[in-house]
Image 1 (cartoon, rainbow, N blue to C red):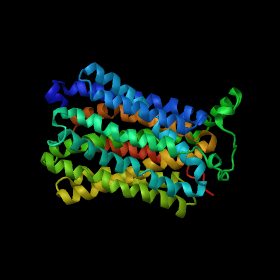
Image 2 (cartoon, rainbow, N blue to C red):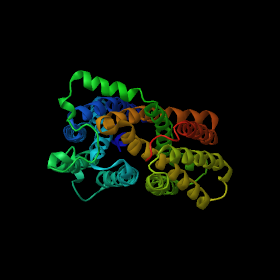
Image 3 (cartoon, rainbow, N blue to C red):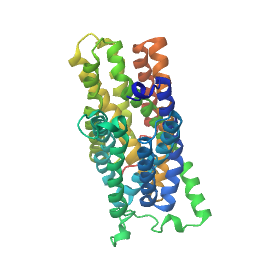
Image 4 (cartoon, one colour):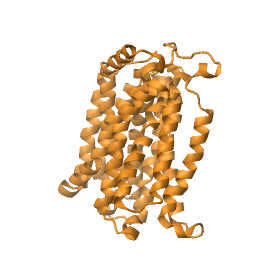
Length: 383
């Protein structure tokens, strides 16, 4: 709609999205530290307000420069979310509960992305309410909804159980991070970044996020160009990746906590090795019809989202602990976001120069790399 009504090009939109991804990536590293130091309630609330203001203002503006700047601001605001909320969850649940709890909680970014797209699309295209606003409704109305959520979060959320008179559940230092001396904070940071598990998880997440974002944005085009499906069929069939991927998130958490005594990396390794097999056979079953394609894409979704949620959620909590959970999540997600940042380049290069099948063979390599890294930390954690 922006291209049609404002005359922007695809390259213009690519610049806007790249600026967003870059700002989001940088913000992950910064806001993880800030949430550990000042508490997630303050940092996440501030980020929500920034995101609301940026999106609302985008609905009032129309210039490309404004979109580029405001989408960057939006990325910084939204980057408080993952690391801050992982930090927020950490003190409220025991390590033995984190796999299951975080698997259910992590469905937020699977279901949330699906519902948000429908919500924004409805308001952008609705022809009966505030018609004169046109595309602007896709920014203004969702910003209003997030403003309400912001109010609820800031009002009712607390950083840790003692804030409301409940006992400490996680037996680590109880003092608030903002009361620590500079040397104590530096010691916490040095201890965290010296953990090899942190960097193994971060680079696994790089491979996962690169893969996931290529599938999210390019899967419909693959179905149109390589499989000769219609745009409508490709749109619906590609949604199987996220919808079925939901079950991968839940399965990974339960397997981790109940079958592997809260070990995370074995689940990640096995799922990534299975994903390598599924990506390898995708070009081989391309002529078997939509049912076969849908089943395989759904299974790939399970094997993507399962490790994705486990690495960015429960694993980050295990590595960072109560004192460094947000920073661990921020570093892991920040490195992963570099994969998100380069995913359009990777997808365009492989599909244009080497063909769509080569892209799937690239996923095989990424999956084997991520799985091999997870094997190195097979025995980390657990009870």
